[in-house]
Length: 299
Ligand code: GLU
Ligand code: ZN
Image (tube, rainbow, N blue to C red; front, side):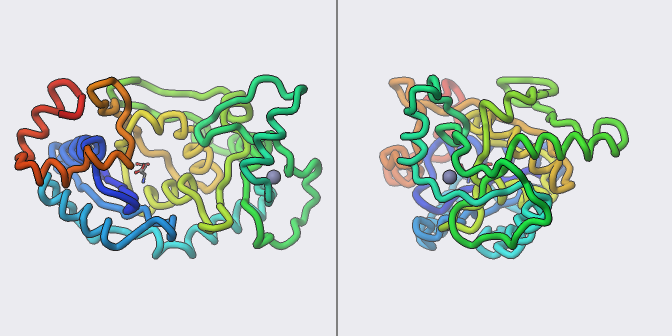
């Protein structure tokens, strides 16, 4: 078993992160497996070395140890670029220059009906999606975002699936977390209607959370992805990318989310709940953990 914790060094760790890291760490340790760390720093504007140092220090204080040198996403840009080239050459990507505003305006058009909210916010209305996919593709443009043409991705997966043995190409994953248990098989409409043409490369990052997380989990040999239930809806995107890129799908464990006393989910920017603030207030890690696990409310 190989699990991982993948914080973004864009702010302090809070108790929600600690909870997630503890679960992933303990699962691996109990199974005699490995626990790995990955620094998700594709947002070069917001990622700061000082946050990274603080995260490592907080993890040590929490009693969490990791097995190999942390992987840093900013060191893997060439891997992301190569995967984008592969998807582009399959005709599955298109460039999009829409702003958030453009998307909101397109969604606001009366014929569009009620706006759909997907894992990344408003489901993209397809403004820039080309009608025809004339092949061979022109060279990959360097301006704008790159979106996944989800309808085509489904068809491409079907085609690949037919050629493959058994269910190797099936869009499904095994969930072993507290909230769902068993095989999750999202229907095709979930991909086209609830998720839509997600951004796989932001023009300012050159990649995206979805693309990087899939490639990195595969490269690190992660067998069990442990993360918060807020990412459950994004998992079909990751499974789709695994199929398209010929990667195997790990087992998923989405855990419940830590809340504040008012029942609101803790946000990363909620500095008052940072691990550092508990440390400063004289907490011991064991007590923090016990208090947290008792009610899953930040103490
Ligand atoms: N960097 C992501 C986060 O902190 C990790 C998500 C994941 O575990 O897939 O939200
Ligand atoms: Zn667009």
